Image (tube, rainbow, N blue to C red):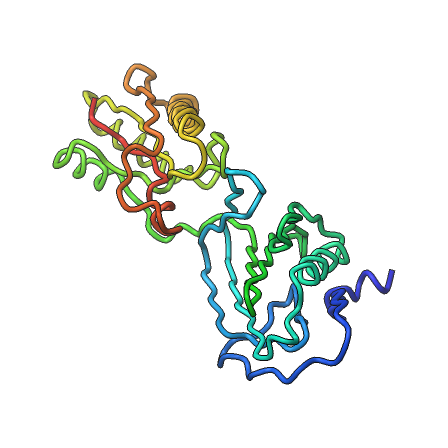
Length: 280
């Protein structure tokens, strides 16, 4: 029992590389190992680090469709100066895979063809954490996502929606949330839904198309179906929980066909996943 309690304190990580570590370069100023993996492969130093309080990372699955996980993201780039001491891909994959399992985590994917990727998930302090390690030439890229919903800092309101509809015929709602690949409206969406209901209450003649949009990740047909299902879920939430008459709303799915920005970046894809209100 004591061993389980000390899993995180004692940093039990199964790095199995043999031999003494070669002299490593100093870590980049301000960069440190993540508490989930407080030790590293011998001879490696941290070349770069980056943390975002909320973003999305697409985890490898071995298939065309990847698994997008949202939350606090930490990215670490490890580099070894003496390439003759570089760890093999198999060593990296086995080490991180064993480290995940050592804390009762689950390994989800191992790239057995090239031994470049391994990822998995675990629970620490009640929080779901996803991790992925990738082996490169002289480098190891480690990504850790502490899964969480986004704290909504910008709250759209009925007046803003109304002004947008009057000027452009449509309004974008970013405060309606769904889990990746699912169509159930999350509880964090209530504030935005209330404002949409307020908009309709203030203009009895207004009818709206509720249009679901996705990013371009995954298969086109699947995204079209997902966007339709999400739009229908929003309509149901407005009619069942916010008193909006069903004949004032119509759900449509646009999938990835009308992006507002490029889908080539994670930030762009996040903006393209949205709900729009179109005057009907």
